[in-house]
Image 1 (cartoon, rainbow, N blue to C red):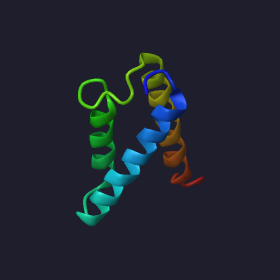
Image 2 (cartoon, rainbow, N blue to C red; image 1 turned 135 degrees about the vertical axis):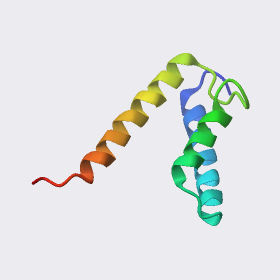
Image 3 (cartoon, rainbow, N blue to C red; image 1 turned 45 degrees about the horizontal axis):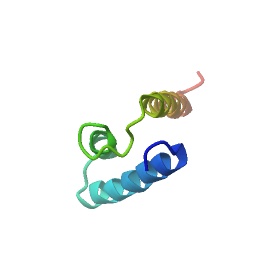
Length: 77
């Protein structure tokens, strides 16, 4: 599983969707589920995403997506 970025990203998305459903069922904020997912897939626990370049890429993508979502919620006035 190590070395193929598409397998790592698809495993990350699948795990994130599963944890998000659990968080919805428990009526907890989704951000907590995303943090738990990040801890699980990192090199310290399950080691699904082990490549430092992949972690940097996913982190950059996550920050860009977060800024985009915040920008959608802003009032133009």
